[in-house]
Image 1 (cartoon, rainbow, N blue to C red):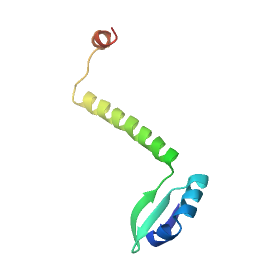
Image 2: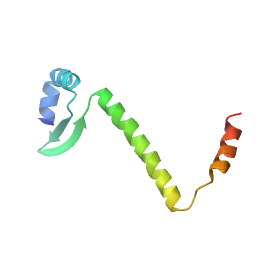
Image 3: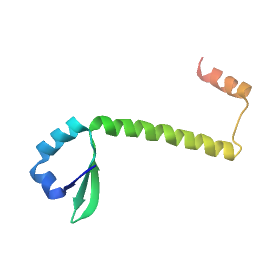
Length: 85
């Protein structure tokens, strides 16, 4: 992963963005030597967002199971039948 200073980003934004789109390698932006932000290309960001959403859904399902909030297959089919009419 590349690291760039925020001042470099300000001065060379066009070049940095072109390289980001070409290489699809995230860039860590630092400000006063401290990590400040990550710069990602759009496709990578959207992929990460979809993956995170899926993982959050799995985590909610696991929590529901732990809490005993489950239904039988037959009950689930009946509930879904109402939505699918």
